[in-house]
Length: 296
Length: 282
Image (cartoon, rainbow over all chains, first blue to last red; front, side):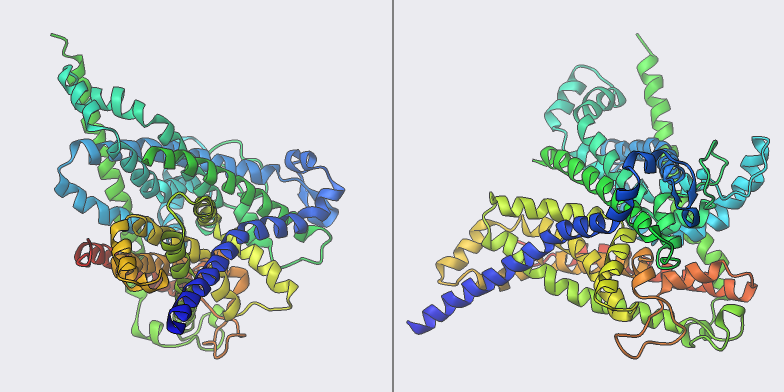
């Protein structure tokens, strides 16, 4: 009997240890939010959030903290990335799920794996070796402009390539979940394959596609090293694709850890991290909830 | 008969071929550019020696410090990560019912954690380290990378563990085992998932740059204790790429090749395991 009680005790004990581990992992989200919030409180006490977000002067030495250039940088890089990546990934996902022979899929997956697995610093090196000179020598003269190549466009292209595998795999999962009956009904009505895709598959998975795009957006917003290496990092609000920009993650990476004796500098950088955290977590949770509904 | 839908079909199909070509070109271009620039300057000296005097101003030596630093951080964080992730996955799928509220919240939290950018993890961990009086060190790097890969490990193992047939667990219970004693069965069922999740997380851990930037620091020496700063491959690439000297830049490109090759092996290995290692599947 005592052996029995020991086994039950062991079972319960292991259960509570594992519950504690799980709880700790969940609490990490809360702890991160609180820590970042506390650290960014000093600057929020001095300036209102609205002024910080809409002011365009960033001179920490003079106590001017305007986040607008960084917000604009992140915004434009993200927009360019999604505009470039969306059509390519959409067409590729449709092709792989609706048109391609299964054999081709087995060749495509390893390629996507590689693209998804490459570290961001490698994309940064690629961008600075290939994309930046290309923009500087080909695109800029074509648009009748002078440009170093370290631009919003370079950041957008690099980010666009980085989110391709994520978008393609999410889209493929959505398309594969569209019921076969709908396919057959559409084909029986005489629709071509593309008509079926356009009117049935894409329409069925539209909300899920929105969620997938939001998820990809949240990925691009947090990407640091790759954009840092190709964006130019000038504190200006970019007026065109051929201007340099300075996204939020690059701001944190370049400045955190040094010059923290400047008043409120650390707090300002923490606020940047906090903004990033809130945006990314909200976009993530929202889109995951929608995607999950699609899976079941 | 209206021919328009057929022309549209042809056009779209051409665009699809084009998009497949674009994606394939991207892969070849990224890997090719790195190899083309880096392979000629990669030598045995580069991967087998720590930097000689004046690493950043040129001089002899390689980046063994970064390779070893990366291995330490990846090894430590993968082991720690698995020690945390395995019990959590087991708990979510065996102890909790599939309808459990707690499990749903936990899964959502891991989704959220998975999406948080590594720069935010880095900044967060650094403030904590400053608060407890820790300096940038190997230990700090291991901790932050562990925190980063745990959600990833949990999520990818959980995807598979969710599909374990309940009858399997129940037959184990009916033979008199307790829940914890079914662990052998669960582990055997998700073994391929553990392997692929581990490879995935190694890939992410070795490529992470922003997270270890503040927490692990950088050093020219191979760390001999947990409290010393450690160099990592991505930072080795990042810092030296901007150097004005050709010889230092060459090291960055050579390090980039090493990093790329490691990641290629990992991702292809993961595929291989997925396809050949499913023998215990019910």
